[in-house]
Image (cartoon, rainbow, N blue to C red; front, top):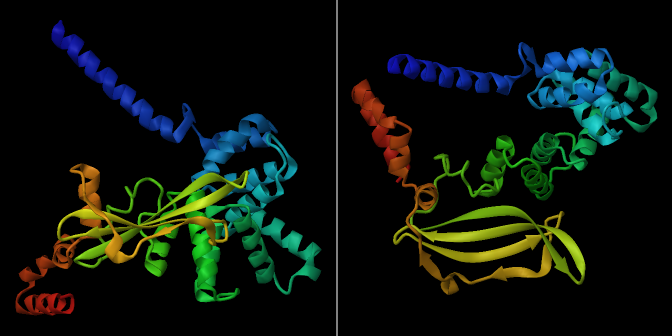
Length: 323
């Protein structure tokens, strides 16, 4: 009897876990978000269509993105918002949604006098959606400012858009990786570096290494509440496992330092303190102070030893280059 009850309990737990997993992908038995989105939108039940379409759109479904743009455009099931409509129309068109592409072409045809070409129109739409705080648009605009593709080649503007992209979506991996690669920013995700410190792509100085942290802050200055960007510059001594504080700045939306909010110490004035022993600090230390040889081991380069003499020679050359 006990065995039967025990097995019944196990099956209940397994069934419940399966139900939870399925519920992540469906909103009702057998119906996904996109199915509910399409069904409710087509019968003009916008109150129920909007949340289903929004979830499906966030998951990257182009049809849902177009419907969401329509609902924002006409105020169906949600307050009318032209900027939000533009964001979702553009996302849908970029994925090849025919209705979204056709709609944007009609808008361009009706207003050709403002644009030199359709590409110019789409660039204007990109700038509009970036200004509307769409993280993906801000990333794309940053890429263009780095390369100079269709816009002014301007690294300052590129950095600005990447920062805002991350502030609007702290999990935007593309923006995080690009700002690390191009501007040497580290730990910029606002979640205490948890997503960044798992990476072993970046090699720091062996003795004295640094990393940036970024966050969004609000503070009062002259009785005015200001939205600012908190930019922290910390230094780690990898020899004795200590952490020091170098610079704390508050930047406005254009990355200009807010007066009286800039605290900077000379290198010889930095006060170091030992890292407290915990899992987070261990990961952070390994991230900042990763040794080049350890990095090679992590990338499993030593498997080349099994390739014979040529593989061994390649490894020796690689080690010499990285010394």
